[in-house]
Amino acid sequence: GGEPSTAGAHSAAGSRPASRAASGTPSRGGTGVVKSAFGMSLKVDSGWRPSGGGQVLSSVEYQLAEAAAMSRAFSQPQVHFLGELVGGTGFPGGVTCKWAIEVGGEGTAWSKSEGLDHGQTQTDYPEDAGAGAVWSHPIDVHYVAGGLKGWPRLTLEVWRVDDHGRLELCGYGFSHLPSSPGMYTLRIPTWRPLGTAAEEMSAFFMGGVPRLARASYVFSRRSERASFPTVASGTVSVELYVITRAVETHGVDVA
Image (cartoon, one colour):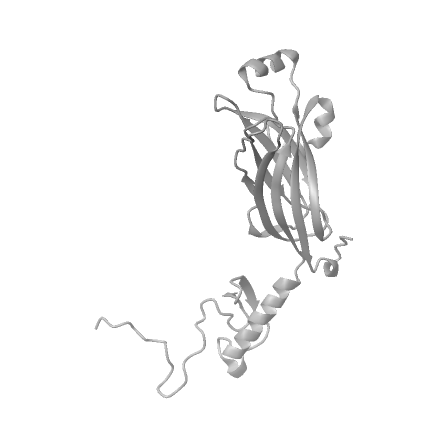
């Protein structure tokens, strides 16, 4: 009494140990999820009957199924963005940048595989008032691509911490990310809505510049920006490596 139960751990006396437990292992005609040697969760489809008519795959068949699942995973079109938000110029001191990579849209099939697709830099206070902000904030995100439609875009919000500790909007910006493999330096201009003379006067003395009702309007309602005046802000610099895999074999032309 009190000892761990070994029921089901072995078959009849003298026979070899049972195959892998059915939990997480494809049964006959079914599917399962396995962990590969790379730590990836892969769906294994047992499209054949296990040898001997058993209910679970043998060790060799299990390894073959895992290898097939890994092959399917690596054959999917993939895009990896690796780089950093370098900094910004033309902004006052004490600025930080909120960023997000947006993908997809209606009728697209993009999905994030790994990494962070949004974040915020530290607040930089340059010693020289004329020097630009330095953030060196990393970007590292990996996608399973769904085609050119819905290609990732980078949206930015630059904010300033004023002398009273309040956050003031400096500008919005966005850029579609490059679609061809290589190293790129992006310089993204930013802007903010321009208020009336009374609003701008109030913002100068008391803070609170006009801003968009939703940050998503920077891209989603870009066609409407002609209907309201804006004022230019600074420029954000981004250095980015674009790495692709198997996109050409799926009809995605990134040349």
